[in-house]
Amino acid sequence: MKAKYCILLFFSILHLTINAQETKAKNFLFVIVDDLRVQANILGQDQMITPNIDKLGQEGVVFNRAYCQVPTCGASRASFLTGLYPTRERFVNYKASHDVDAPEVVSLPMWFKQNGYTTISLGKVFHDPKDDVNAWSQEPFRAKSETGWNTCYYSQENKDLIVQGKKGLAYDKADFPDDAYIDGKVAKKAIETLQDLSKSKKPFFLAVGFQKPHLPFSAPAKYWDFYKREDIKLADNPFPPIGAPAEAIFKISNRTDIFNSTEIRKYSGIPKKGKMDDSTAASLIHGYYACVSFIDKLLGDILNELERLNLDKNTTVVFIGDHGWHLGEHQQWGKHSLYDRVLKSPLIVKAPGKAANVKTNALTEYVDLYPTFCELAGLELPDHLHGKSFVPVLEDPSKNHKEQVFARYSHGEAIITDRFLYTEYVNKFKGTLKSKMLIDLEKDSKENENAIWKYEGTDILNDLKSRLSKYQDLNNQ
Image (cartoon, rainbow, N blue to C red):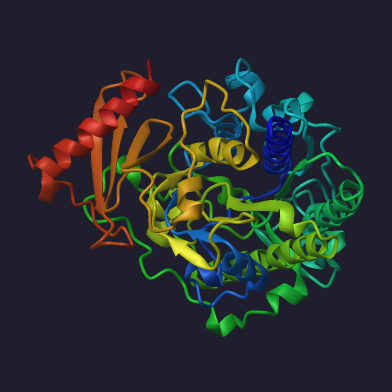
């Protein structure tokens, strides 16, 4: 009897051990898209042709209210790949990096590498391909096109501008194949990498970074042809929000201002001062849509290969944009601001055994990605993390996750709750409060009015100030 009990105990322990190993040995495909705002059919933009993003959303959980920490690529990526909030000194701009801003902490890919994973970076993952290079099991892969690492100009019009020593247009349409473009090369490499990884017994953490729809909006002509020019609608609010402070308004000038991106004004055909004319605006939006559909196609190619290799059943797929973007709303064509349109970013998670074909309104932020990856993998959490795993939401999307999330850019800091977006702008030299802005997202989803005057002295505003102050005290010391 005793021997029988010992045998049963042995097999029970063995079973638990195997299950634990299976839990830990899940693969991860992390897809990061540059400058992708909430712009897909399944994300509520029904004019978009994005069948693969839509399919992924139907197979997983779509987060309606996911927010980046910093609306610029280098800082956003450094933040979520380290699991740290930004501060006034850390993760400040697009040049931010793990190695410079937070070398003392273990990054997300390094943590997985230290825990037995093959970690691979393809395309734009960290902003700088040399950042935290030892976190990857092999040298990060970056592709180039004939016209540079980010441009992909193939139209004769843009080629002529380049020959003349001028900057190309902010968009490009040409009849070239997908793999002539940087992102097409990255997708091809991802497919080849998955084929290699399928032959290994080691779990993998594969990060794939697509550059489009980052400027310039360059995509093969067939994706432009998905959309009719006459159907392109311009932003219906190309004006500053009523009562907005100067810090929140895009100043129509060519002067450099840290809050008002002049990135787009560097391109040919874009006025150095003043408003964008309607024809140019329509071309920009058309190009942006084409780039999104292009990336959608490449995502589909990768996911189809994942399924063909029978890796999909044991691979968690996480799809994000590093931050949002403005397409003419509030006269802005960029991301360097603290509006909901820019801070809210796509997040779709398809995890084996978790919820599928459902959307959640649970507030989440990108510092939550690191602990979520760890929990899904069955890994312990490093001590430095600022975020909170949203695995409970993947199991029950009706659950709340956080009461508020935070974001910052330059000398502005924001708190987002289920209803409000409250921002404080400080004097960047003295650190004293300069101006405030409050958006009632429930009543003003397009962010057309600063409602601060309606709430001065109320418990609502006092509570928002208090919560933001606690965040500031914690992160700006």
